[in-house]
Length: 363
Image (tube, rainbow, N blue to C red; front, side, top):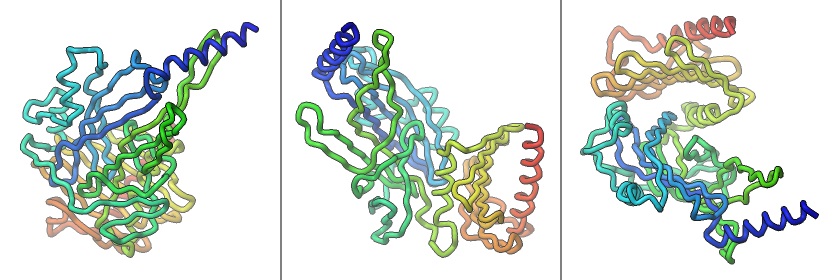
């Protein structure tokens, strides 16, 4: 009988709470600036309110920098509730996306300096939009079989594509989508599905020693797809970033950090292994990405960011681990040196594999 009244009290409390609002998750990404290297700066706002109670409304604000190569630099700024008048001005600024880049806070200033954003960077977006369908990506009117998941704050990946959806913002391989999922079970709201759903882990309520799952919230979540639209299907690089994205969000991913060099490794499919290496020297960020198929290195990407406020990257296609072809090169870097040879990437890869064996032997 005691257990019955406990449950009755619990569901009664839920009905009271629900009456004050909708259980929901809201995540908003507001594009602020871009640069020529393809980095996009977003202001972020998120609300997680699974119980629908105004009393526990809390907004988290922050910053996010991404690019098509998979850079994901997410920072917190401040927290606010609707009842906190002292944060009212900041809240309104963030909500409207009216952020003054000429007077950045400490965290924003660090990001702007690291990724070379300037206060007068104009927010540009491409003239076309991207449409996503299950197992298909449409780009400038051409559709190919390429399944790409969206990512939102915390690098949480989308789980289900309900409907085709067009991007609301796009720049150099960074596409932004507004996704809506309404269950239609509260206050006679019609069920609505637009774009993709995200599987956020549901918390549990502890009441009288018993655990009860929180109700699944409605969700209004902005998500990003990062990809390289300039790659052609016939150069073998069209899905390298898809495997890289899958690797970064994989539970089986292995990571190592040795002497300021960060490694990420995973088997993104039965045949494909991804090796991602990142490190910095002085004011320059370095990245190496190796794509190994059936045990052989077939593609690689190398980049440098920050040298003299510039950016450089080169994409390689490799045959039989002997013949190296440059698929594309962007910016100013080693490719401008007459003494530099594309085959040097093979030596770099061999050296990295020797380093990796030493790291594993020490574990």
